[in-house]
Image (cartoon, rainbow, N blue to C red; front, side, top):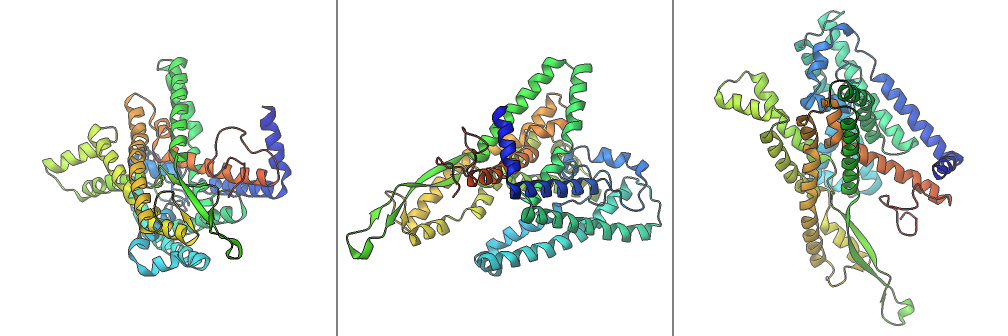
Length: 447
């Protein structure tokens, strides 16, 4: 405890870090306040059916990402999700569109152009999603206090503006605060429902369930699963790399320097395979339900794949995650580019020729470590369904895996890494004297 208090004092003594933390907390508070502001013209007493609709399924996930703003018909109901969709589209375009590929290779200028394109695409996506959200409000019987035509126009403008505002907040946090702003907004939305879910589950177990013992076992299981998610996020395969030291003034041959390591992440795709798989699983069901199609086969598909606790749903979900893990890893990790960079800088993997043989070796290693990584990712993704089956509250069960846990773990680790870099650069002790934070080396410095 004494070490913890000392670390907090060290953090607070660094003026720049303190300002960044306060700025981040202030902007996050503004975002949370905005998520409680109701759309103009909506009767708050008529939201019961909408809140019931967003208690589970895809809409439940979207509602969790927005911190409940979706179910409250807030001005930030769409949240930052249109920006996430735009970012994914830009990343996918980087595989097939030469102009996007060129911008990705143009350094800082290319990054600025891609960011600007992503912003415009975010506005377009938000403008398309807003009418769908408003149509769903009407379908759920939400009462209006304004003329429908006036309400639709005002709400469409407000929802689109709300997404732009959320995107601006995220970028300000990244520039002026600590951590990745967009990721922090998503994480804050997710953990906003944690206290309520915690107390509901506690009261349920104590008053109607198996009592305190069962609840303590649940907390221990959550702790173990969280540690497992951290291990998966941090796990890397270190490939030894050596760099040839150039001989001075032509005297003697080049000699190898000390061995370094190239880290290859076991889960290089992060949480994206789960998001892709969820979209694939929910979109066909949603289309079939709203299309009014009938028939035994249609009913069977809706019954099997509409039940997120069912075996058929989770088996298909897990297989899709494995497939998308390989797909997204191939997008994120370019082994040819890594091999070219090594060769250009005089680096080589011991026993492997530079160039194409190195790229082939890296690709083989990546394929081998991605397989267990994809299996473990699929396991984490289906754990919330397992938690629901054994009787946990739906909202509480979401924290036992899936996107909620992985995003929370990833964002916290990334933010802690940035805080630790400030401490180590000021010659203070880091956040931990033992253990490993991603990016922390044995000499306690950051590359």
